[in-house]
Amino acid sequence: MEVITYSGLLTLLIIIGAVLHGYLTRRHEIFGYYNMFLLGMMTFYAVPMILIPILQDRLAPEFARLGVTDGAWRVVSVALIIFMIFFLISGRLARNWRWVDKIVPKIESPPTVSGVLITIVVFTGFLGIIQVLGIEDLGFWESLLFQLRPSFICFVAGLCVLLAVAYPKNPTFLVIAAMAIIGGLVLSTTFSSDRRFPLGVLMIAGWVAYYYWLRRESRIKTVVILGSLAAFALVFVFIYNTIRHQYTIRESTLADRINQLQGADRSEALREDNILRTFVQDTAHNSGWLVDHFPSNNELKPFHGLAYLLVNPIPRALWQDKPVAIGILMQEQTRAAGNLGPGVIGHGWAELMWFGVIYYGLFFGAFTVIVDRLIVWRLHNPYFCIAVGSSLGNVLGLPRGETALFLAFILSAVVAISLIMWALTLVAKPFMIATPPLPLKWMTDDEIAEAQAAAEGVSASVLAAGYSAEEQAAYERGEFEVPPDDAGDTDPSTGRPAEA
Image (tube, rainbow, N blue to C red; front, side, top):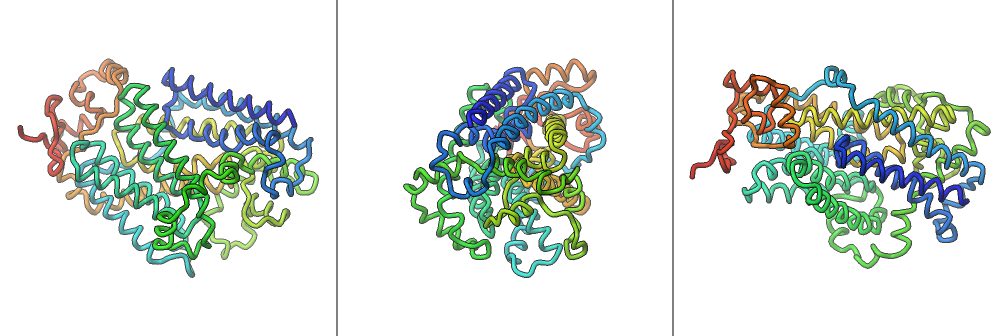
């Protein structure tokens, strides 16, 4: 069992080194898909594999029930390091794939006060409809809306935080942001017991604060603030663990969850078994079971994850033989009480063994870096940034799985939000451009200097405010007004400089 500990320690060191190197050299944003995926690898593989041999006698009975052999553990330990190597290589190569920016559609909605407020109202309306529908007798479209609900909650909360960041001296927007976060936390726990949904609400608050405020601040300030938010999120997880399974999914209504959260016993959160459930996840065990049973007892499933992703939108009622999730297959064969998370190592092994592990590493290294680069290239468009951040809980859960399903949730949320924003802009653009753009600043000093050197003829005030060359052209056409550099505070009711 020592090989498990060594593999977990080495993986943990690789993750810490990759995060620190990326942040100190500014190759990677401290808060992005790349680092969130690495955090997931640490949570579901590195830390548990360090602790499993130490706490073996105190683990939950279901861990031992899987009966993972020593040979399977050795395979998982080696496969984990191989995965990390190819993940890092792929991520390094994908940094310069600028062509991706040309093929991924943009959200061309006006980032104004009126535009953000109208968007908040519309998506809140969607959430109200979904909440009223509940989860009884849902058809295809109702089920689709219900799957999108967690991302819509995060999108609304993110937009509310955006207003607070844009107007930090406006108490109304600060109160709205606080209410959106608290309300989103509670709402995301209804009709669900998943931890990643309320975590997503907390993460979107930090996400928006980072990209439109902390990114320009000192590293120490950034780490302290984001670290404090992470500590609060961990405490919330400890507390939520003690109550999340007390009701069935259908019984966990809004009123019930509010009563639960208010009456939660804080002392229960610090019990040893609760802490162990948080830090010793079962993902590595599940991957080990798959190594033991593929291909010995089950046929390999080449590129199953890709197939599952592509056919996921098709209702099973129309296609009874649609590919089944690996986690469901595990549940049936192990007779587990619930769906199991196979982990990226388990997914890769069940598909094509070592080759499967390698192409999962290559794909997710490239995917997470490409998304992070798209965010930085499009920070002038907060709708895109927040839409991409609306599924951070699923990004964190990608290493656990069901990986293809979580990826489907992420992609479908961005597509759905983009389509709604396109339709909303088509209908309400005259109202959305009634006020000037939000006074957001996101470019670092180095990026401003680089842009000024590269973009001849683009005014310094526009670059300093963080607007792109395309927005500069729109400014020159009179389509929106850029506040001067010395404008001071901005009147939130109009978006224009406040009078002295």
